[in-house]
Amino acid sequence: MSNLEGLKKEAAVRAVALVRSGDRVGLGTGSTAKYAIEEIGRRLQSGELSGVVGVATSEASDVLARQVGIPVENLDPRPLDIAIDGADEIAPNLDLIKGLGGALLREKLTEIQARRFIVIADHTKVVTRIGEKSALPVEIARFGFLSTIERLRAILPAGRLRQAGAQPYLTDNGNLIFDAQIPAGVDVAALERQLKGTLGVVETGLFLGMAERAFVASPDGVTELTPR
Image 1 (cartoon, one colour):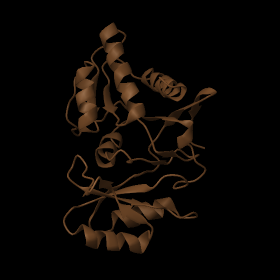
Image 2 (cartoon, rainbow, N blue to C red):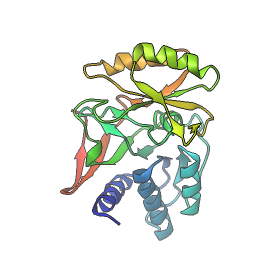
Image 3 (cartoon, helix red, strand yellow):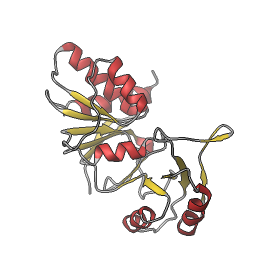
């Protein structure tokens, strides 16, 4: 395991320390969230935790959770006690870009219902402004997608349809993803409203005002960030 992978695992362990027996836990998707799922499974096996139930944000996380012994339920209207997930960008106020792994719709549907949403990431994901390093994934319906992309380009001119080899990338929900570039100086809250009001857009990777704290792994160790 590389040093950075070890630190990502340490950040996940710090987040999982907030999980209590009997909690319903939103299980994130991606390389860092994987460590959190494995740690919850380890604590259940060792008896440090009991009665924990997971709600997975992707098919991959559902499979992994079951493999490590976490019972998995479907998302329903009941609140989740806590959700733990990674991020592709973390701004100083803990606004996030998520969805480079393609699970943004299920992640947002799950994490919006969590009483506490905890982010785990490595230091390369910390930015001074949203869109500084990462594209913004926008999940769009397959039907009429070229028309939807035209509407999106009127708002965010730079971007492209995500590909999986020669074919367009498909999400777990059977939708497409348009990866857009956010120019500097954009009001991201206004942008989110504009994108969500665009016909053909299913969801965006802007997770604004949702995270309670973030555990960020760097060569100096794990730092805990809160909105500022």
